[in-house]
Image 1: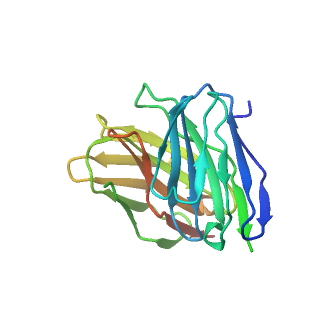
Image 2: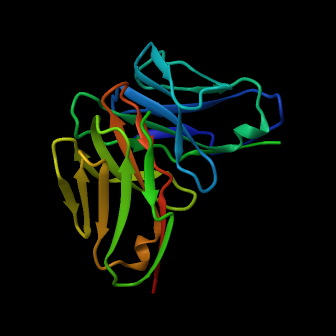
Length: 114
Length: 112
């Protein structure tokens, strides 16, 4: 019963490097989200997807890209890493269609850009 | 634009005390409201979800209320325990665009 799985758990990048944060869910959820959480702050929405092939920007999309080719996977791409992208990244998913569906989170990826 | 505010930012109470955490939101067009718990270095776990048509939800020592018209929710924790020490976040799911927006959280410390 995996739920939402994120990899890697930790990563250090140099300025200008690129990387992809992986997220997969096995609950057949149609909605998926990427958030970032800075120290002592709440979560800010980066991108979200309402189904395979459909993505949209959240509150802080600059410097990131996403794709959703399957229901299960929602990778987040950082093309040119900057120190401002040092944060903890969370992937989440839910099933929309009923208003009592909870949001499920992965365990997070701690990213440092130096 | 939906904004979610939580007060207080931090709270320290002695064990056994009943306490209330507050959440307010600016746009009442919501699908639901959730309260989450986050332990240090961990992900978020949903504690309670209140649908827009509901007034409250209960789970064990936790009770969450929702007043959509005034844009407020409270999380009531009865007989607090040291194990309740964590950050509690409130989040609303908007009907327009289906984005879940989070507050900054209340960091709770329950002293033994």
